[in-house]
Length: 126
Image (cartoon, rainbow, N blue to C red; front, side, top):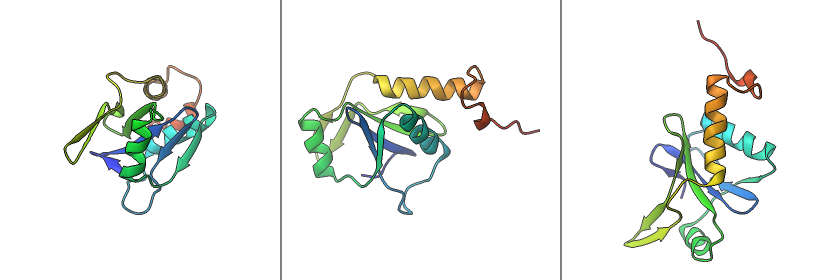
């Protein structure tokens, strides 16, 4: 699994987040890079590696994955509550998780300049 819709996919565990490696088939997005930077600053181990469907569903079935979310320019952060594969539904959550919510709030604060942190990410174009 590499992307979801037009977004990069992220799988959050207890203290780590896995996102597929950039191998030429995945967009190297600004939002993806920003999320990876923030997660590392917050103390998460971020692993850029492939994850198979078998591994993913095993993690879900053993309640190891805490959150799944997509990152992209249009939605910023979008939670994934359910994954369907070959007629089977894998439930993740019914609401946005704390990591995704914090990322969403932080990125929106940065965009609107209401936070002093990461102001260098904003470039005024005239």
